[in-house]
Image (cartoon, one colour):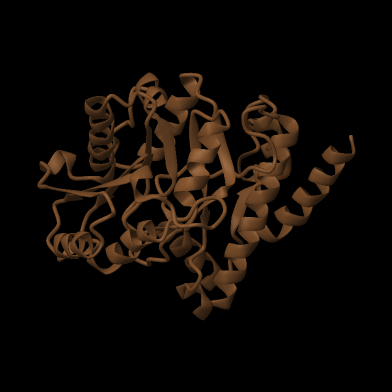
Length: 311
């Protein structure tokens, strides 16, 4: 496996990210042979000490196959989508040079910590027949939401809503390649695909934002068997200065504002979700009627899932 990590000014978080790869274990909890994987760290347009952190880490952990690429991208290409594409393409090229057509290209973020068994669990899903794997994004073990009980409750409630949505999807639109239990995450913090699947999909679309979601769609269009594995986990950053439009930080900021103003957090209603999953399309003309408060949506979703399970 070759793990591609784009990084831009991540001096504060990069060490924790890289440390995660020095603690990898196999499925039985035994230390994983470092020869099973490598890390390609693509530093782009960094003005902080990210390069220093990376090279110091490489010196401290010589057994970790850490390859550091330091680039200055042109303004029109200075974004995460282009950097991630370059890093993943470099992984593909390395497999070609080594004659390893069956290699696995994975990616994560420089502000993310992979679980100790992330490499082993990802490879296990590939060995079980998946062409691509999305890992579950977890809240950090210690996070800034502890100081905001209202926002933390909303965040945990939304995770319950997401789990129920995933369960509804598994009942209404079962996928033999992605059986329950599964989840709905396929973000850049934990994505992997075989080199063959990566090529069939045309590579990762180098978009300024949403490159991970576009890659997932490209994989599905190309016929890839995509597994949303609950065993593959990463701990995402709790950063408050979000860089990606629509990312976790931006979402939390929007929720925080809504709650402070006494407004509800609105989500898609169960009927709209069921119609969308079932191929019926959106609820035309319903507008905001297709959205309900998170507080109301969770119990309604739970009831709907119980009804589907009883059928």
